[in-house]
Image (cartoon, rainbow, N blue to C red; front, side, top):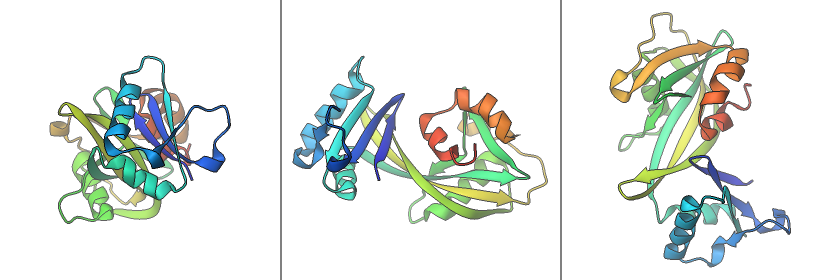
Length: 202
């Protein structure tokens, strides 16, 4: 299975060598040193023309471990909450997003996902029904770059009260959307990683 790592509107793809098409430009990550890997990513990040960076490897798991070492590596967790065939989204920094946040020290991802959803949305009575594939994205961090792995879970809720956005986390709105509304409202104004999370429900 390939791994896609998002950076803004760009993608870094870790891919098995045998699955690569002959005409696709690529870099063999297995032979790169840590400094060379970061230099190649920086060139890609600053390029006006490159939108996809293919790293090929003989072992995806080892390649991911190698790729993450030059970055500050952060673990987060979040949820896709469903109730009555509607799904909960937050509006933050002018985009629709899903509730998520960093793991506390010693905290497991399932506990963190529920806690962050409760804190960011003012929601209660959550239970996890399904584990989704994690997402990865890179962002600018203190003059360098951080790589975040986010664990995702489908959740259901019996919450009946008011939803309260966590304004100190810059969340302006918390809203339920039907599948049709996700298509028309959320998808045109969200992040590539969120599109990956919601692809199975829309």
